[in-house]
Amino acid sequence: MGEYSKVVGQVQSIVKKQNQWRKKECINLIASENVTSPLVDAAYQSDFSHRYAEGEPGKRFYNGTKYVDEIEPICNELAKKLFSAKMANCQTISATVANMAMVRMFTQPTSTVISNSASGGGHISHNKMGAVGLLGNNQVSFPTTEDGYHIDVDAAKKTIEKTGKDLRNRFSLAIFGCSMFLFPQPVKELAPVIKDQGATVAYDAAHVLGLVAGKKFQQPLAEGADIMVSSTHKTFFGPQGGLMLANMEENQWKRYRPYVFPGVLSNYHLHRFPALAIAFAEMLEFGESYATQVTKNAKFFAQALAKEGFKVQAEEFGYTESHQVMVDMNPQGGGKQAANKLEESNIILNFNLLPFDAGSKVANPSGVRIGVQEMTRWGMKEGDFGELAVIFRKALIENKNCKDEVLALRNRFQKVQYTFDLPVA
Image 1 (cartoon, rainbow, N blue to C red):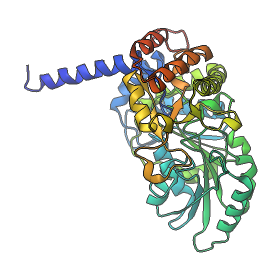
Image 2: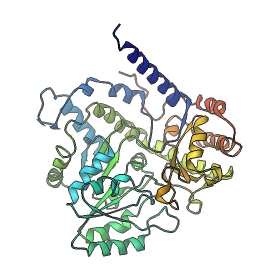
Image 3: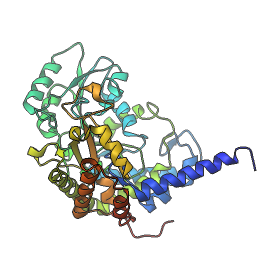
Image 4: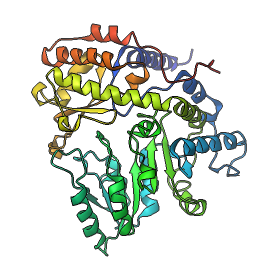
């Protein structure tokens, strides 16, 4: 045995423990994660992971790509059908990379981008610390209503018109979409105002893509977005990666493609494509029933947590219309303490800033962000989330370790749902 065979054994042991703990023993409520089906997992582990295919089908800079040239168009066509889009590109390896390409497509250095602020739930890539700032753009935030979970439409119209008058820093792009994402955004109301200023309307659907696919959330492209970018692994249950969709004509889309390749990527992780094609097929077949259950579970869980004594956010708006639930954990010591305490009982979620938090509280914010999409995929329904709300009370209000109860609940849900009953190749 070689000197480093012990390292191999150590790594294999860590992988085994990770698979057992996170996939079999934990209640996973991370809002940006999901689980793939055995069919997707098998497709992901293919020879495609060893190969390169720079370019696009039929126009490659590598030989040996004939099967890549078959699978990539299948992905694009399924994506277009699922989202009623004219154009699709599945090459970007994350939503952040897709955002990099998208921002560069529609801006020049010193352009102005309007997006959701970090305190308003916006993603870092929409702001100065991410893609927008890295590409030399200015950023202006959509104003929010007093509750902090909605864009203020009337105030936003004024912001858009004022920003459009700044000829020195031309308003080029508006980005809708959030990381803290409870409710649809006013794309339909604001898209005409944005376009009147000569700017492009973009929508980052990373968190809600599975709900958009299942027709249980807003439909951004139909409501006026010119382009929609996303990841493929949150409410959407595909492999990790990025996606770009647009309702543009081919000649216009062709002008933007170089911002993807060679703009932000060369090879683009080909093993994603067969796995993503299967996930698209699963979503086309089961997406509406899955998305319906996700939204039912989220609303029920929010109501159940409130009944158990938690300060669930946005009560006056019905708590949520997405997969997410936001809870103010200040009575339980803050978001970080609550998240750490829940992990002791094998409940995994993330601490999160709430709209009233100062940015300086990012390392120890008031809230936690809960996502129900993965446990919905494992088969949990409303009553099961009612049981989980009781466990939350015992763990966080009564200060009990509830690991045994969590293991017993989790053990009832060990088979991925919303997939085809087919043999794994």
